[in-house]
Image (cartoon, rainbow over all chains, first blue to last red; front, side, top):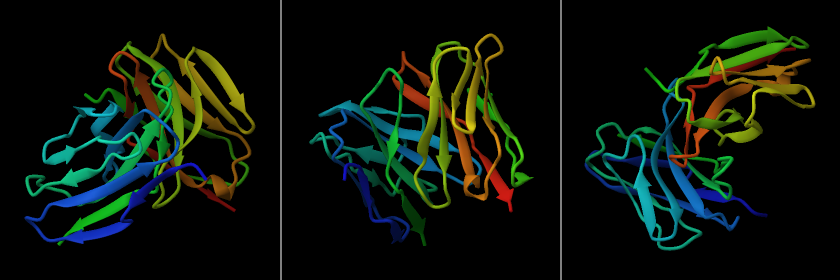
Length: 113
Length: 111
């Protein structure tokens, strides 16, 4: 089945540690996105990539980093510089930049202890 | 001021009620308008999208856009307990190549 796979589903980390969230898609979509969701705040864009080897900062990129070495993969690293990393992280992809229709993964819930 | 403002809710209605979910936006460059449904602890899924002013129907769901007022709505007829979820409006700025989301409205439909 085609879709987006995020892992891990739940992740705990200690303060000061970097952590990488995986996002893989087999939909052959060019564009991929990372969003952060906090209670009552909707989705906020962290980074996005419209093509391999290229990506742009979203609205809240500070403390995060990404890479796009393959079309299928768009991992997100939450660094120790991110002051409030506990959140629900959603990866999405799109094959239509004109309509913006997004296909989402199931999300990764990160908790900093 | 946020670019997309969504009526916060939460909303609780009896089964069979008509539900109205609303968003306003400020950027005239926004061109495509979408509604996503998100069940608890899941990723959002696209419910409907439209790009022109007017109404678009899909079964029990109707998306309405008024570009002159910068106002979008989603109506749910004959609401069911399975409609209980958070509904997110999202608007695409084609110039920027990215969508901006509202904060979501959590709907509970009681049997």
